[in-house]
Image (cartoon, rainbow, N blue to C red; front, side, top):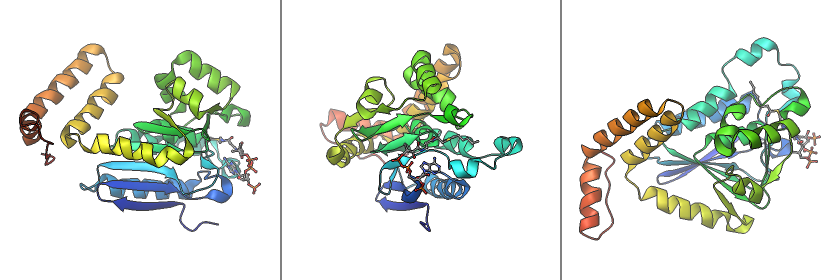
Length: 258
Ligand code: CO8
């Protein structure tokens, strides 16, 4: 048994949270969810961290979903408790850029965690699916809502009602994965994404996420106001002064996150 269900490492402004229960395909039990929550909250409060990468510590799975053995004893009231659904919402609303690396099974709650991230990098070994109906339950950690938002209502209904798994390439074609790459090129793809993201104005990154994620769920007029207020705030930042000056001076910007 792994003592630590999640392992956190940091490299300058990039933190990695590795899921670490390989003996059960990284199935998420309550302990793992709590450890994930603690790790995420610590990183979320760390101003030095700009990107959080979620991945598997090894083995065949990103995560094969909620721990089914533990699900057996769950009651109706347990379903109302704060848990995976709230954690994934907080991850989605993170002020950092979040990236999931999927190089194996991402099923049920594992797929739902990946969907809560901003960017998903999938390999030819990736297999996405929401097979919960096989167990007599439904995707209950945001899956019924995030999947149709990513791939459309028709495809979401197909994937949830049949419970079929889709490989990395098909996931990429339907918009479930942001990138499709070969397993041995996954780190290179991640580095390219990190290189692009880390060059951006950090305050602009936060407000772009806010405008897209919050704006997506409200009416167009409200969404456009969120956008207008966000850009108005950005016009007053030192980063905007630096970013535009750097362009005119034909050099890289040196953003200060203010
Ligand atoms: N939970 C517990 N144990 C698991 C899980 C899981 N989700 N997935 C795999 N394991 C265990 C197996 O039991 C096995 O353990 P053991 O060796 O002790 O028998 C070990 O991992 C290896 O698994 P397999 O032998 O099955 O490996 P295979 O390569 O044959 O198959 C699969 C791999 C396809 C991943 C297969 O294990 C599988 O189908 N797993 C279940 C996938 C699934 O149904 N996931 C959905 C779970 S439900 C869910 O996620 C709900 C989320 C919403 C909750 C909201 C709460 C409020």
